[in-house]
Amino acid sequence: MSTAKMRKFVDGAPALCYNFLMKNCEDIVSLSEKFGINAEYKSEDFYPVFRAAAAGMRILVLADKNTARYAEPFCKELCARGLNAALFVIPEEEPVADEKTCGLVYDGLKGFDYVLAVGSGTLNDIAKYTSFHAGKKCGVLATAASMDGFTSGVTPLIKNGFKITENAHTVSDILIDFDILCSAPKIMTGAGAGDILAKFCCLTDWKMSHLLNGEAYNEEAASLMRVALEECVANIESIKTCGREGIGSLMRALLISGYAMVIAGNSRPASGAEHHMSHFLEMDFLRRGERIPLHGIKVGLGTLVSLRMYKRVKEIPQDFAGKDTVVALAEGLPEPGWVASVLSSLGCPTRFSQIGVSEDTVRDMLFHCYKIRDRFTIMTLYNKYDLMKGAADELIGLYY
Image (cartoon, rainbow, N blue to C red):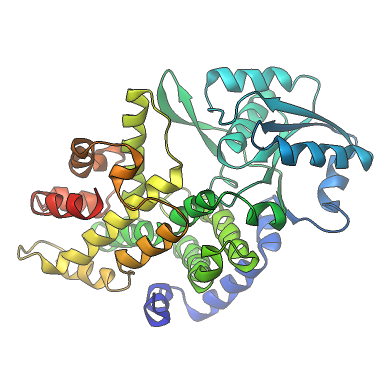
């Protein structure tokens, strides 16, 4: 993606705000402190801020069979440095955040003051949910830059076979070790990249709704997210090779995504039509009782669809209210092919058929996923003006 096009996308932030935000993007530690979170990088002194805060606490180090290889030495190091820590390993390689698993961890928390998840998405969700209901603090040692839920105050759970969002609380500590993050499975980094590249679409969805419908728009939150996205684009080659600089910018953007949502008071800075597509597909996987692909993988696919939908608006002969506005917004967006090349370089699928959903399901998604949330997006616009009938076959041909 050209620097000029990215600059146009970011130009919504005033110059002073832009400079201030760039400083914060470079210093995620200071930004996290403003939200009451200790974001701490591993040092020779082994997370001294966390160790000082955890002194006197009984710490439960939570892992699954996959992340135990990081949790075991971490727990031993805590004990060697005088902290009271014990390891709890969920006996599965890929646990699900459901009633059974959360109940197991909740029972395991008895006698402990703090739970530290060693993992990323699911383990982080389990730790936040169980510690919230137990009235205890929690944190995470991130094992992959794979999702933007590290700093959120809610958690997705599977209850009675349905995926729902439950209240939780934010983590007290996010511990970052680049040796771990850079060695994570490449596709997990790809999932994180998919979640961040999606911000092109969701921020544009939000801006479009603001301009066409008068929806409230928080420039501070949007600018914060845009600048973090720009940093990732500037480091995209390093992200594609899982280099330290690239993973650093990706991890910062994933954390900032949560902070932007807090500032906005909703998920608008981080979630748009591409997330609605992902949620629609998740429900299909749940109905079929099959394993759900990584969140960022599905979101990445939705991003490709959203980008193409924006780009083709100028090709539509039909006129409709706000068309010129949408065409102008689309000019600042990257081409879907560029995003597809990034995702592909990280081992992520670029067609829905690659994740095991049917063509009929994808067609249903195009016509119905906008109903999942009462939120105006490019998908809402297409269905509102009956544009999807002329677009569905093309989109399925490109991305199924």
